[in-house]
Length: 231
Image (cartoon, rainbow, N blue to C red; front, side, top):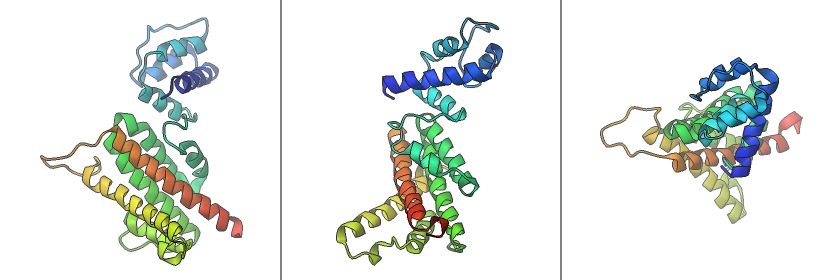
């Protein structure tokens, strides 16, 4: 996280907690994230107090607190994350938004969990779009099948486009979605592991969540532009 983004995020957390909690409540709340305090019951400024408590806390914990409070994390962390979260507002995308928020929290602290959640988030987005069309899910309900069904319903299937460049990009998105599902199956902590398990790290998790974000934004923006409100 860039230093200015971290500074601004901690500032927002401080102001939010200042306006909603007592000093004792702040101690208890931040203690739930493993942040130590001296047990002070009163301070001159709760805003300054929170900023001091968070000054040496790892970026991943600061991000978790911000997400828990409903604050926007810096867009530099996951490209397009803020925009995708805004598109996931509403009951139709409740499951997708829940899993996406968890994926964002886990990227730095539980990367293998974040990879699995990237897959389930995209599955939920696809199912919500199919629901809006009253379209039945494919029998196996795999991410690859769900994504292909959505692309077909919204006239995005690569084979239906004459322009070779558009065809290549759309085909790439389908393949990337399938790749996210494969990472979930082989390497995430959603499945059992054998003795020889290749461990994926933060960079892999960020790759999976960024890929999900790109595909999710494209599908939701296409749906809104072409099909929302009867258009």
